[in-house]
Image (cartoon, rainbow, N blue to C red):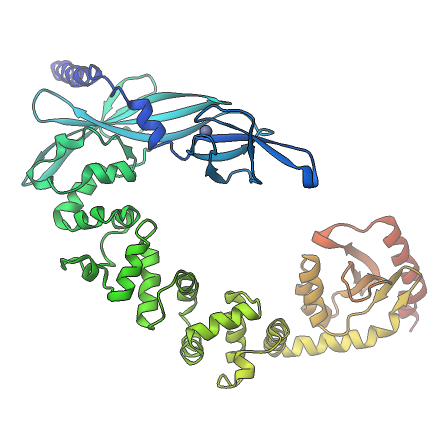
Length: 499
Ligand SMILES: [Zn+2]
């Protein structure tokens, strides 16, 4: 019992000191500028139509209404033409009162000596059209001290629903808080012990959400963080904090060497300082490895390519054709890089000669792509496809037409795959069933365009009953189509029985 009383007393003292610490005067101002900077809205409405379409906005920052805007999209970011602050566009037709949520931290003194507390809050920004207001709920207090030997000693206290504080992890706790949060940066000098004098903790906290102790711990083993902060590579620091320093030569002392980039590529990385992260660095290293000029367009392509280079053939083509030739070809033939490598894989499977330019750079890419795909499919399912083709051949005599509609019999198994792709349903997977005589497939088409997929009909070969008749995205057939199908059934299909 005595023990319990002591604990309560200890807790009360510990909490009381912190309870009495006021939040910084400019707390709301800091919330606006940093943690919630992406959550300010420009509400807009659209007036008129066509050429006379007008976008009229109202800005949450400067509270100006009736701002005339250029064409904008809901959810996109832009700049308010009046106050020049960053805003997010939000169509007025959606609710005008809603909230945004974020977690933030403030570091304060926890007693009169050298214990500090990291207070973690859930903050809600309540948007009521142009009026905004914050509310905060403190959820966690981490008490910590620092000494050179064992770094940070941290004790966690969590807030329960009844407002009480509990020490350590509470098993009935129904929430977990993120570790990496926006941290109030202005009073962080208190943590700049000798060890951390050059850690740039303040500058970094101003730019990105961090976990203060992990940042300082990382700084102890990797003091070069300072260089990255000085180069304003904050996104890159985020990568280091999340993924560690594995991509880096962290025993080196020059940024260029740490990154492993030479001359041009390093200068290119410096130009991209705002967005440079681990992924971008990998892309730049790829350009460097193949001596490809460091440009933004090449970087984009290299990031796509990198994911595709697991395949030896791709590397071969890439080296043979050269990077610029590939990008030129992709642009000219308007083909997507994924489709292109898809095609190459199929060419490899078909043992096409990859030294042949006509293979690597076909004149009609889409046609070559589809044909190679067809061929690979055919070869891997040869027996089934041939059987299905035979079935279709036999059924050709069932073709039928009236003034507006036609019943078309597939010419080959591949027509089912095309039909399925065109109508976004799964008839392509029926080839096997057709081959085994478990299903019959026909195409209902419009007379005016017999090549265009319209409806797909499935018949049960055992009793010649209609199983289903489906159009785009599996939509069911209407009466007009069904009447046509019944007529065709009577005049053609049912005669199969007699034979
Ligand atoms: Zn404004």
